[in-house]
Image (cartoon, rainbow, N blue to C red):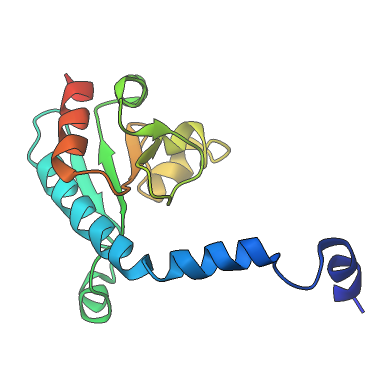
Length: 160
């Protein structure tokens, strides 16, 4: 039975403390996701009008299924992308952010930033990244629970 070694080594259930923390955090999940949706949309709209940003979009707002997503979803999530010139400029912007932490993983309660061409999509050839819409200047932002105006101010100071 292939599951048995995993169950034997990892245990068959969550530890009581972990289960209690998970249960407690699930009670506020809807509120946190709603906040992240609103904040990410506000930040994306502010960045779309910024002179130093070539492109700003939430996902799946920029995907081909946008109309379907509008019907099925109540928001587009806490992830957004901006393009800030060329790859070195994108790197400099990411390094200058104060509220967004550089991180390879995304999706927590704190705002995070990553540059896909140097992290998640580093192994793909430039042509394949371009085909997928991932420019070298793209920064992927995971919006947390901070105030939208604070995050926008942080991005604006980093883009100067």
